[in-house]
Amino acid sequence: MKEQDDWHLTEAITHALGRGDPFAAAVRATRMPMVITDPAQPDNPIVFCNQAFQSLTGYAREEVIGRNCRFLQGPDSDPATVKAIGQAIADGRDIAVDLLNYRKDGSTFWNALYLSPVRNDDGSIQYFFASQLDVTERVEAQATITAQKEVIEREVALRTADLKEALEVKTLLLHEVDHRVKNNLTMIGSLLRLQARSIADPQITEKLENMLQRIDALATVHRRLYESDDLSHFDVGAFAANLVSDVVGASGRTDLRVTCDVDHVEIPSESATAVGLVLNEILTNAIKHAFSDGRAGTLDVSVKRIGDRAMIRIKDDGPGLGGAQPPSEGLGFVLIKRLSRQIGASIDWPEQPLGTLVELSFPVSG
Amino acid sequence: MPKAAPLQVLIVEDEAILVMDLSMMVEDAGCMVVAEAPSLPSVAALAKDLNPDLAFVDVQLAEGSSGLEVSTLIQQRWPDTFIVFVTANSKSVPADFGGAQGVIPKPFSRNGIISALRYIEQGIRHPPPAEPMPPSFTPAPALAAQWTSSTPVHR
Image 1: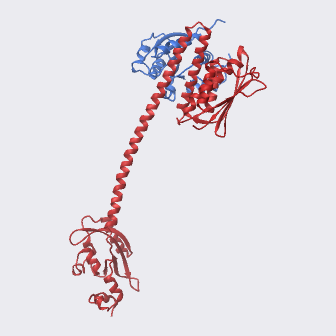
Image 2: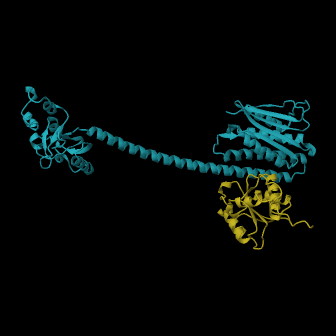
C-alpha cells in the first residue's frame, strides 16, 4: 500500500478500535489543530484535517477537504502576513506567524500558524503540514499591554511636561527673588552711605562704615549662593577668598599683602550667612588692629577641611595680643560669639610668637 | 602740565536713592555728573552735544524701558562714550554686552565704584589702564582683549 493513501485509509479507523497506523491515530486525536495540504493538486488544497481543527474553526471535515487554507481569512487578516505565508510555500520553507482567522460563525481568533513542507526521499515537497493554535488570549493580552503602555507613556509625557513647566516657573521665580534681594541690598547700602555723609561725628561714621561692611558681606554670601547651581551648599573656601579681597579693597589699603590658601569646602547654605558675618568681623578687626596707623603687613587666610569640620585660619603679622585675652566688647565681638555658637563653631586665638592667629572650626554638614 | 578736565559722567538709573548715592561717589572720585536720566525717553531728550565720557546704565529702567536700548541710543548719538551697565541682573546682559564696555554688578560698594571709576578713567585717557582691574568691574569680551592682553603704549 502506498504511504500517501494511509490518510484516506485511517479516515475509516477509529482509535477506539485500536487498529491502523498509530501515528495517524495520534494526529487525529491530538488537541493541536492540524491540516495537511497537497501542493501537487491545483491550488494546494487541504487533504486532511483533524478533529481539533474542526472544533477550532467550526467547519466539518467535508467542508474543509479540497479547499485552500485561505478560506479561514477575512477582511481583518493582515495582507502582509498572508503574503509572507504564500512566499514561504512558494520557497518551500517553513514559517511561523500569528494571523487573524475567521470561524464558520464569523467570529475571529488569533491563529499561531506553523507551516512546514514535508519532503519525500528525493527531496521534493509532497505535502505541507500546518498546525494551528488559538492564541487569541495571548495576542489580546499583548494588545492590552501595548495599549496600557501607550496610555502610561502618554501620562508620563504629560507629567514630565508639567514638571518641566513647574521647574521653569520656579527657576524664573528664583531669578526674580535673586534680582530683588540684590536691588534691596543695593538700596540699603545707598541709604547708609547717604546717611553717613550727613554725620559729622567720626565715631558714628565709623559705625555706619562697619554696618556697610556687614551688608557687603551679606551681599557676597548672596552672590556666591546664587552663582552656583546648587543652592543647598556653599563653598566656604571660594567665599573666604572673595570676602578677604572685598574687605581689604573696602579698607582702601594698598599696603596690605594678602595670601589665600583655600580648598573647596562645602558647608550647608543655612550656615553661610553666619559664617560670612563672623569672617567679616575677624577680617575687619585684623585690618583695624594689626595694621593700624598705616602699618603695612601681611594677612594669611587658609580654609581647609579636617575630617568632618571646616577650619578657617586668619593670621596677621601685627603686634598681636601679647598674651592678653581677645577683646570681648563691641557689637563685632558679640556677633562673633553668638553666630559661632549658632553654627556650632569653636573659635580660638592660639598664642603666636608674632601677630595674631584666629582659628574658626565648625561642622561641614548640618 | 595742566590737570586733565574731570571725566564727564551720565547716570541712567530710575531709583532716586541710587542716583544720589552714585552721583556723590562719582564726585568723590573727582569726576563730574553731567546728567541724570531715569528712562530711555529721558536719555533721548538730553542735549545732543552732551557727549559724556562715561555712562553708568541700569538695565531695568522707568517707563518699561531697557538699559540695552539706552546703550544702543548712546552708541548712535555719542559713539565715543564708554558704557558700563550697573545691574543686579547681569544675566540679562548679552554675551557681547550689546556694544557696551563693561558691567558693575549690584549691590555695589563705595570702594567698588571708586576703584572701577579710577580704572576706567585711566583706560579712557591712556589705554590700557596701568592699575590692575578691580574685581567690581567686569569688562566686555572685546574690551578685555584690548585692555588686558596689550602692554601700555609709551608716548
